[in-house]
Image 1: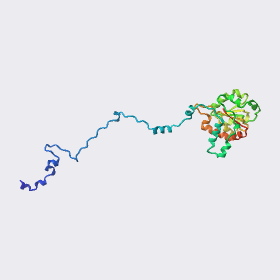
Image 2: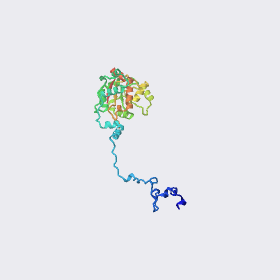
Image 3: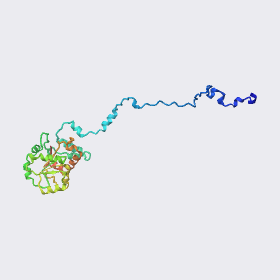
Length: 276
């Protein structure tokens, strides 16, 4: 048989049939996995995170600091923790310096310093408006009798809103006597109507907002030269605990009004300032 097949017949056999160990086939017929034919073993199924109790992470100190940094403090929060203090002339002097420090030179700031003689006694939070005005202006009756100029007033009271102006006018009853009082604010009243009213009548006392009073002066409807008293509604606070000069818009208009001749009148000692 070897002669029929040739001496080297085994060399022509397939490699898989030559040796069971090399072919990977056992005599029993079961297959054995080689390295190349390895089937990947599936990974363990991940459990849902809801099945495990995890410890909540505590906020880092840096995060809390950032939160505090971005939280803007409200003036009502600050004032609610502080006892109300009556305004003083030094408070107004400081506001004037702070307001003009970025736009005026050192010499100009010194010129804006108001003399102590132009300030009247400030309200110590014990007075009503009428009792305060009686104290700072004991000769009011004589002054109003001699006042005959139109387009002017003897006394101006500056406040933050029309509603507050009406409250102040109602509280003037014990002081004003026969004096003519005029509302000087913008709510429901046109500026031209107020200009005509001032041109035709003698007014002794005006109560209003700095914005409208400034506009009347600008339109030549109100002359500040005869003015004897300028009273700030300084200590009153609104629902947010803000005083008149705590409101940026009001503060800006006050300084614009002061620039329209009030500073020069104070230095000439013809105008007195009061903080109610």
